Image (cartoon, rainbow, N blue to C red):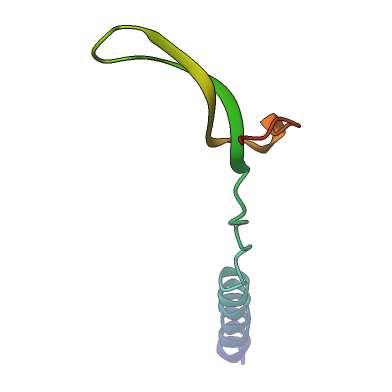
Length: 71
């Protein structure tokens, strides 16, 4: 009778371990925190060496979005 009780206890523990191990994993959020932002940029002209400035668009944190728009 002890062997039956041990077998039932072992099966119960193993089934609980199996159930806990196979729980659905949390889904990672695929949302990105980057948006298209406008920023003031400067670049050196390759031939003349003159520094050119102006508004450009690129990717950056969404918190950097403001009221300036690239026109």
